[in-house]
Image (cartoon, rainbow, N blue to C red; front, top):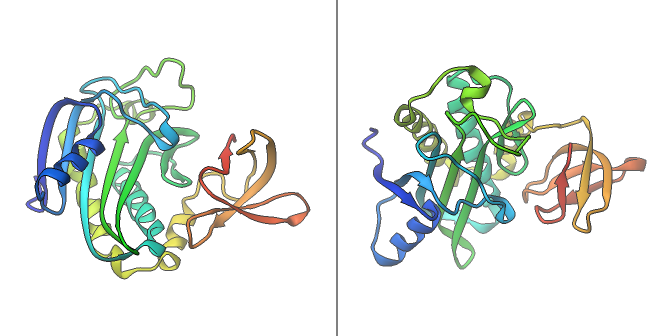
Length: 247
């Protein structure tokens, strides 16, 4: 395994993000400490959606990244860096049609194969540490009622070695994260927007009240909001809690 990472392997845990947070409270783990579990019992995605994962078939891990000078203003840069790292890793493995669904779900075609949950621990106007949780569907082929979920095995027909896969993603992650503090969101956005799921395609959204909106994703603002062109050419920015892409 890469010499940069200290890897803790757990058989089962409620959540690798929570495990890392507790570790931070009780001791001083090294930068790039990684916690991997065979089975995550209470994985949660954005907005507390529960992620159903079959033990030993998927990759569930969290990475600790410490910062010296990451301003809160540029924290969306982290979402971009992590999304691009996962994209680059999957690209190396020839996974077809990989795109990023704002803010940081990874899709293959129109199905979600990976969820990312980043928790920033703030110190004043700086991000002190980030805990980056990644859940990638790898060799699981049955997702019950989740019609929008898929896995690397389902989209390629191949079985993947979880350790090798983890190694590939961590190397891509380190490449992105080593330089992320020196970059602004504006510098990172073009690469991210090129991969944006359903960009410039007529799409249906639900707002916070559940009302339906029709529009086109035109990009992402430097504060990380989704920029949608609605009817009558009105351009609006939406935060994570304000809009859901229904397709």
